[in-house]
Image (cartoon, rainbow, N blue to C red; front, side):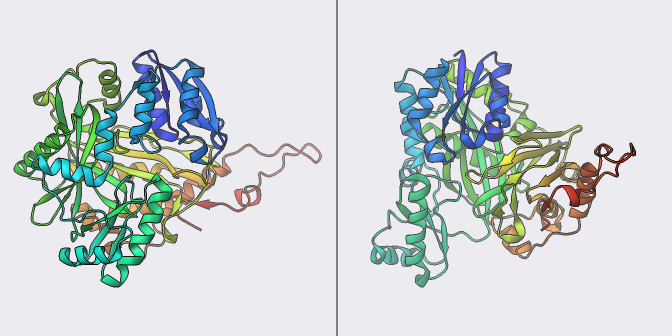
Length: 497
């Protein structure tokens, strides 16, 4: 490999470009018309346009991406996460074009990308499964019979795709038919696949996942687990490692199950096996993400292993270079996802111009960012701005360090979830490690901005006011600098409206 086309945008494209640069590889960014001049474009050695703003016409356009690779002379493709990262047809098309696919084999992607096929495959490998049904979309009567046998409540899930799309919670039989129809429509729109099935809904489970890495020489290792239970709309916003409640025995059982699931599909490159952990210490296979995860930085923190660099080496045919006994996690790491969204309005996206941005720094703090001051957050894509993570020798110190980092963070322009994240990290239940996938609904369902946001408001005002006085327009005397309220027009800070 000499030149890598990064088939993505935002912070993950910046992250991959940095890893390629360290490996001595040239990079090619792709961008839609909405992302012209975006930070990920400037992070690469070359950039090629791939279409108009809608993702289907740009970042999801396989022909345009392959044409960009040919135009730029790329010989490899890294898909990042999201978009086409878990699309087996795209992976196969990349390989058919004679390019190196920096990811798992297309067959592994296809097997794990179809939830029902994945369940059957890992079940044969002895991995425990959540009780569920076969495909049920389109046959409501059959669905009612199967779900009655499972017992309510249940979760309707898309057979393909992920990221919380095509999922609906169903508490009673009356809700089943509308939930099936809505989930099928959403899955079809998001993934071009409207198939859905049903799983038993576990009460207050933890979402725990295991990072795996495998090379083409038969070496397969895990890098420990991450807990990702703090979620909104089935999407993670806070992740940490290690899981606060995993015993040594349970960790050994869960990581062994993750490796068994990966071996069942001949897995190569980076991937994550996800589980649900109930209050009695039983865990069940949820799905496998056949790509690098959003939350990979916290695993890098505790293992000191660069996961993206490992992806590049594996794709180039090199051996992993270490075995399971060489993986020795230390300390505790926590990450939050900073979004341009309004938690007080059901996390409604808040696109627009970022007028000012101040990111935290210091020992044990890491920022993976895809924006700068002057960046416009587009309406067409996920509104993730950055990931802010912290490491410390123990969990309590890591929480304090991350809260301090968030207190230093300022975003002027779009509404963000910054204040909400501070309140999550400061909640007594979170600080005690008492988390589960219903945490936000139980503790912060009626959240409104205030409190910790006042600090950010003061900092943002200081940023806006720290500007040169306006040039003199009358008799040589300097005019008074206008306030931000006079010059910036309507704007919103953090989670305030």
